[in-house]
Image 1: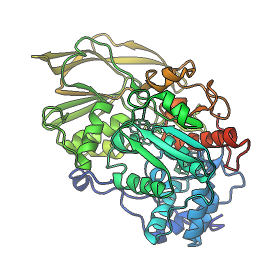
Image 2 (image 1 turned 135 degrees about the vertical axis):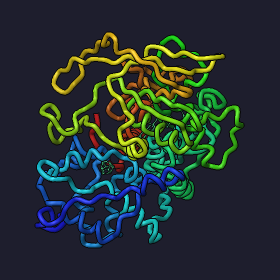
Image 3 (image 1 turned 30 degrees about the vertical axis):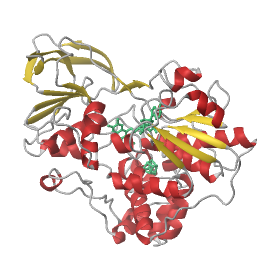
Image 4 (image 1 turned 120 degrees about the horizontal axis):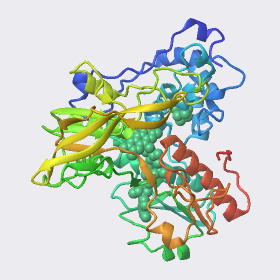
Length: 491
Ligand SMILES: Cc1cc2nc3c(=O)[nH]c(=O)nc-3n(C[C@H](O)[C@H](O)[C@H](O)COP(=O)(O)OP(=O)(O)OC[C@H]3O[C@@H](n4cnc5c(N)ncnc54)[C@H](O)[C@@H]3O)c2cc1C
Ligand code: SF4
């Protein structure tokens, strides 16, 4: 429980960011390490609240046993802490870096004080464990004779594969990209998650006996019938990759790109891959406008800044959210509030204000010689229902035109791609176009399961890992008639 009086004695401290001036010159992670002694103090703030909402339904989707490891860190028992953490989370080195930490929003101390620094503690437990050499390949003692194919190597596929391997099944992960990791590897920029962290875990999984096949596009160069014949179960973890687009005049001009066309290119360059100059989309020397005010937009922002853009702006259709909780976003729910990411801080530094502008609609693009030059927008007025935007209307006379040589569309994702394994296997979709499954994550086709963004729609890494783990439990039960893998009720 930490120190009984810790929450009264100590103030919240989190990891600090490197200075804007230094971090925009490289692609390395933004956050500095936090000293061990400081973390112990932060662990001491956990107050034995009785009902730890941090790992309840509104907190950690993995059910991480947070108060216990806070206490272990406070007592300096780091080895026990990683043992405890690994019971519920296969990849704390990912979530400790990039999870938005719903656990902290649900922390009981957060009702009238700043919450416990849960995410930094999580990251440091695993970083410490790697440093000490405590994280070693742990292959299963015995193997079943069952084989499982996992399609997609994002956090859902990795989480699922790790759990199935623990249960003794022989797992092959098929990934169409040239590297394993899904969005951890290709979408999320290095300044949030350096890629050697992903590779380190994948190497451990290989050493534990999991087989990875890259360049394997299931439904295309790998036939689904072959998977059905050669494996006892299939788990679809292909993500939610169909991006939302904008349908306005001028959209077909060159220089307007989906965020997930733009971001992976820089990640590839950071791996040391070569992309011919004429194919590489760079913000260097350009007036950049990002449409979409979410995390993907922020990732485009940090990337454009590091590439040396001339100017950058980010537009959001919705109104500016409140800066703190309001009546209809009570504790312990996740509040939709105004947040300043590291990229927003970087963009604001030279001009002294946020580059985001809210309640903006794009009306059209115009250009020269087929290349975009201007974005034409208009301001919106929103009718609100409490803190929720309900209805919008354009404000007459508020039209504006801005220079724009590169427009990045970060407008969210609609669903998985229906082509490929989904249609070829005849898997049923729900109303939103995601794979529909039962409580054991099995689709309408016996032996075919789904997890992660492909099942729940574009979400979070922590949810993907959680779903992958739960689908593994469903597969294990399907194959063996019972399972010792942990079970959580998720949906
Ligand atoms: C730019 C960006 C930034 C984000 N930042 C964050 C963040 O900071 N924190 C956070 O929690 N979440 C973030 N997210 C969301 C998070 O990355 C996703 O929710 C998560 O990765 C989903 O995991 P997944 O395994 O379901 O799918 P994905 O990570 O999308 O992985 C799916 C994999 O399946 C492969 N695949 C698809 N079809 C096939 C096929 N037919 N054959 C073989 N392979 C196939 C794909 O190539 C891909 O590698 C971000 C998303 C984006 C787009
Ligand atoms: S995975 Fe996310 S929600 Fe869970 S403990 Fe870590 S930071 Fe909190």
